[in-house]
Figure 1 (cartoon, rainbow, N blue to C red):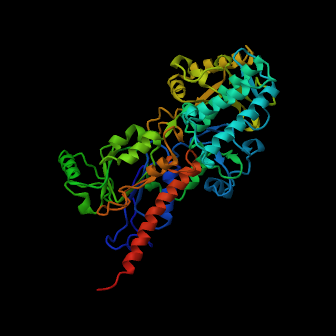
Figure 2: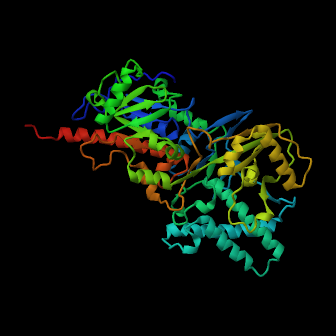
Figure 3: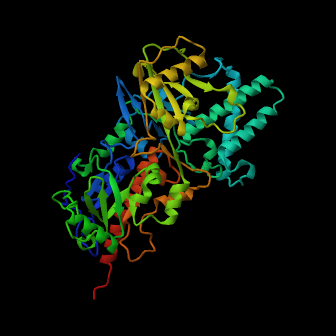
Length: 555
């Protein structure tokens, strides 16, 4: 996939039908994750042939990363297909037989809670005691009741009280604590355990939301995220199979790996002509390929008919009529000022700044033999000394206190004896800085401390994700942070230039990715659908221009 040669031959040239320029539009897709691949596949299927994908990393897939482990695949990134009915990822998997070996333990109905489905979750305190099952069940029922209340603010238009600070975490803690403390039947010891359980549940919720803390998640917007009906599925052969299915009909020469883009110069102006002239004078322009995607010395992109040129990190310049940007919200937060020239409109910058993205990481620990009982599906860490804390934020040396649990991977016939730990927020970044040996030692000490079993061995293997420090990802997935709204996802998705810029070439810069889907943000189907959405914008524009041209009266 290293060559970027693109054939312009087509039996169905979409732009040959257009009113002005009788050639194929040159489209560049930035990013070969699910959104980028879906956009590319849709364009190619509709007769667009001059399409190039620029992927910054050395592999396709984006935030999908399956690691082969014996008979199994360990998912460092995307893990579940969330819902079935109308979910394009589910239908792609089902139609290609990827769910035939999905076990009941890998198919969950109802609100998903990490991996825990079959068996029983074991809740242990930091003094080595297991919390009684009935206490856990009572608290779980209470927490789920309050969770449903958090959904009502958006879904039913309920006003948010000032005391909640429009925060899911603040609201949940306040309501649950009041109900626990007012319960006349529970002794003080049980109340303390339930208050400690509350903090553990909020850590789990943070991992699922990929937020540093549920305090940062907007209460008024929390209920807008839409769940597709049906179960949640794991793909035994690995989520990368979905990536492979999306990419299998894309010619290998279309995708350029290890090709990060430094700057997108759009809406070309005289100011940029000076940049090109100066650069070409110093011989910094390279020929992209024989199809002349790169700028030649002293050639104006507008003269060549292209309103965009892409400045790559390897000093190559690539011209385009349209670019579909699928960079993650984390990358946009970090790089948007340098990444776009001219700068993004103020409202789009505000949307990028308001929306939230954090890091949720996994820690896989492999053992030769299980130290957990057969019915145990997870080991949950409950810190009794955190019952009354307001903020669950830790200094770097205590990063491990943010690990909420270790799930048991089922079935053992596929995974062996494997635990999957979860950690999110700044503490996940602290974990990324540690080496495997340090992580193994700390996790072993935690497991010994909480289970009360001093004989738990160190794992024979450690595997973990590092999405926060990945320069091409910068986080796991997006959430509606306090102060943001669903409208910010839509503002981020709006193409540039805006429609009121009548003199500018339309649909120059388009945006896709999970953080551009208002209802399905944070999901793989949201990413895939967003890529198809932006490809469809271009397809419909050229169809509309063709209809306009053919209906003009002849003079």
